[in-house]
Length: 539
Ligand SMILES: Nc1ncnc2c1ncn2[C@@H]1O[C@H](COP(=O)(O)OP(=O)(O)OP(=O)(O)O)[C@@H](O)[C@H]1O
Ligand SMILES: [Mg+2]
Image 1 (cartoon, helix red, strand yellow):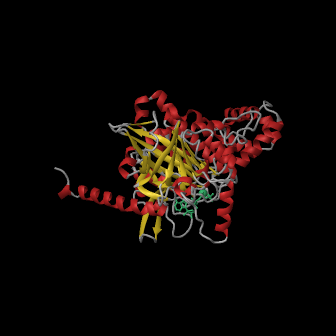
Image 2 (cartoon, helix red, strand yellow):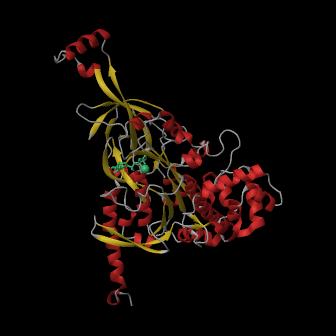
Image 3 (spheres, rainbow, N blue to C red):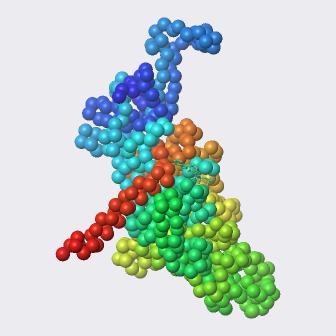
């Protein structure tokens, strides 16, 4: 369908007159065909063109105000709407897609972009579907999918205000990864318990997907010992049995590095940790926690100051909590269990609804550190084996708590923590971070810059979306669109997935997406059953 006519083209900006009766929406993709080339344009704004004099405007508007129909001679010559669009891609006659190297001629017709044209942009060819392409507020039938192998090591940043759909996005992504049955690993820290079953009755979670029985690994206080958790799913009239491990880690399994990489300790305090470890071996955390500062001081041969000892004790107590997660003599090591599952391409869900902020921080640090170190060591020592490992993505909600410039020591000393290390160096080892936050302006610049894939959901605060826009390609003209995003609508930037534009997307609503995957997974399981039955098996 024809939408208008080009009236100006300069640089990568095209202005076109909007044809009478056609509807053009912000974020919409349109095309212009000129001399065998197809230009794909994204509508970013609108502007009326008027040749009316101020007196005419005054007279006509006053009439309109009184409810009279304004009469205007030669109206279509003197007043019309235009849309401002950016050229996002140029498709040459041979079908090759690249960045714009020319502009369409003036007065070329502007047309609706068909599904066939849209497919040439290859927004649907990745293996991790997240939603559909969106024109204005309506979704079209072309999927938006990230390319996991390239996207994961380059990190993903998800930003959005309260209720914008961040956790829904997290569940959709986790479901897509689970559905790939081992191609990638994912570690999710879920402090609200919303990923397993959804956050309220009627919602769904990862447990609803049949493959969860094989590819999900749950770490949760819901189970007292390693085994399987049976969950009933009244929505489906089914039940599942999911591999699970208790939310427990014996303090004797903790190393000084686990604490240091929380970023909570100064250098003298970190030295003390190592000193205690050397002195007391496995029982070092116990030893630091049990005696008072003076006793520890003398047991350590007066090698550390009493002050340092008491501050360090306080921090360790804050991080290890009351012993319900970091237990004594329980023998469990959830970090080792998680690592073994990550190496096998599992989606690991760690539920921490009752953990304190300190426990959460230590837990996330220990797990992320073990995974990162294992991949790093493997790449250095056994590159062959490393190349077989699934890329792993570590997802943290409230990322500003871990990666804020404040969390990393404020303006003075910058203390590294495991997430800043992964943000900087994870790429080399196939370890990526997925950072979810409402406050990107609080994140370290480096993290925003290093996360090459960005999912921008509705975000009302200007400093926050500017922080993201300043560090991403294709977003120069996106401000107006960001302001009009509704719940679940997003702008997706992902050069690693081969996207050459800021893609307007509607993220799948989790429950709808899950129902589709459940059907597909059931079909796959059924064919697997058939091929296992002896009379159908290959000879
Ligand atoms: N893509 C979507 N399509 C339809 N509905 C959605 C979508 N994303 C989110 N919602 C709905 O919006 C509500 C809030 O979503 P969600 O919990 O994901 O937001 P959030 O950004 O994580 O919020 P919070 O800041 O409270 O953590 C949910 O009820 C969810 O069903
Ligand atoms: Mg949320």
